[in-house]
Image (cartoon, rainbow, N blue to C red; front, side, top):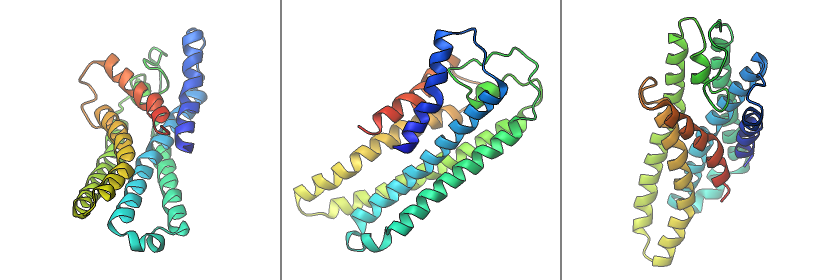
Length: 222
């Protein structure tokens, strides 16, 4: 819930300002801060979703050992690690982004200061930055998504072994909401950052990222 609130608070206020006062500029520091925070929350949520999938795996596949495996100390350590890795990855992108010269048209073609849109304004070679975006996306999207799929394959196998229909329904209901969040979050993010950056309709990708950064956090609590 904290990540979802932070997502919305980071992008929505500035987005509304841009819509109501299109001529009002965004400072360089403000734009860099928004980019850094967006990346931090995005990376952290990717890793937290993996932690949640592991929690469900332990709850369904090892119910008798759940309290021992998922103790408060372990949960806090996993959550803190997810946040720390999210901050560090965002910091790497920021350190590579700030030194770039921005001498082109000072207009971000997006709803907020999204990193790919900001990189397009630089009048220097951004190959290293784009490579780091792809590497970071692979690390926090493809790797975690594969881990979640593997976890749910084990969960599905465990559910199919449950004899009672009521037990199966309860297990499926436990996982269904998390699966919906995973599908929406990873589906839009992988399309945006792992697919070809120079292909596809730009406006469609803008609206896809808007859905990813705004509507996903609204749907998650539901």
